[in-house]
Image (cartoon, rainbow, N blue to C red; front, side):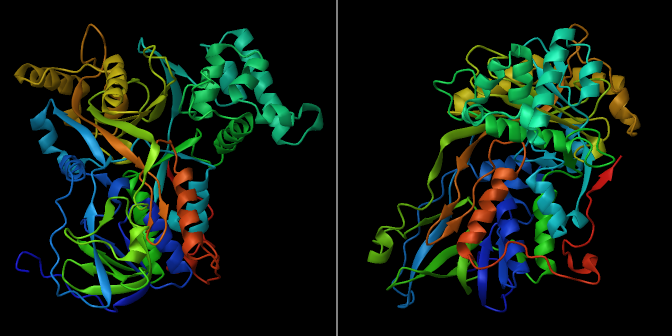
Length: 573
């Protein structure tokens, strides 16, 4: 016990719910349970909030990925001194990241500014102005703890480095010089049909047969050319897999779902006065979302303890039912329900066989998603991919970079105006679904090689970066640096030079609802809607009689965080 730090005892020792991990689903459930008057203890072994949904300083990200990429040590032998009342199960971690590749091309410059970064572990992520995430933030009062900024535009990229603007309104369609007159007319007619259908106009209603058909077939039926179809399928409807290959597509989008996504996109544009486009991004990074719900839960009485590892679970020997947890301090804490971060898995101490009530339960727990993995990349540059723009999304549809590309690849560029990096720098988040590590690396490298100059790691590369630093005016460090840092990194190609990159593959895990509940890992979607649905499902499973975030009256909602107060999100212009 001498190696264990002097953790303070927790009082009380019995709760309605214990939540381990402060990722987004866990934080939402903790806040919902606290609002429903449950006593909640929220623990995290890390010294920060967010877990796999966190935003970390540059210096901390590699160690976080490394910690969660190795297999845990074997369960330690158990002595016979344990309680006769409980069976004790080890709570260990499992590897969730693989093929981690960190490259540093300008160590001196980055070391000076490493604490000025807030890098999203699960990027790229953004909010549609009208999606479930924003509605939940508004309805729960979590908007009091966050600020947002609008994403300037969305583009579709190709293998030549071109970025084509995605028109998001009738005015944008007419102004778009990349579209011919016929393409503009086709796109206008299609949007008019969709808007009429959503408005319930009988003369333009889409048939039930068409609504149940593949969306790509409906677009073909409408006579839309390949370029317009690609815009709609991958940059607006945000399809992940190749929709043209209907025979093998894992996630074939139906017309009804495609129309719903178009409606979301349309409803997001212009919803908030200071948001020019359909997408928002939180200032200080995506980790702010988990923290906002943790603050919401704390206002309602949830107790938070960070830096508190949980080493074991206590289950009833006779029934096999969960009873409580054992902390690294040795203290036992009891609760009726338990929610686990996906980091953890439950194992039996070595040399022991499970009691009969647990024999059928343990193999089922901690299943993986059968959709494979998600490849992620984070790149830091000195210049924007587009000299006149700071924050934007780029989508690479399937087969746009190389013939074997079966999934879309998304890239989100974020600048210092969103407090994720020092002035004059840019962070690029890249992601794509993949089957294995090799495929994931190929997808991320395809984007990097198309858009960036990747220098060799030697003294010459540092000299090239320092040259770009001088050209971009980084030493000035003012807010105008973002839009004025147009000096090309390579006179021949005009591509930004890479300063630093992190490439890694993340496991996709499903949330589990059994004798112990577990939340899912970040998925491959751009927004958080599926993760919020998973959190709601888990909450309803453990508390079927309670309302998810019931609205309560308050004379001063800002004091208690209820959602009856502000009905807008805080946006910076």
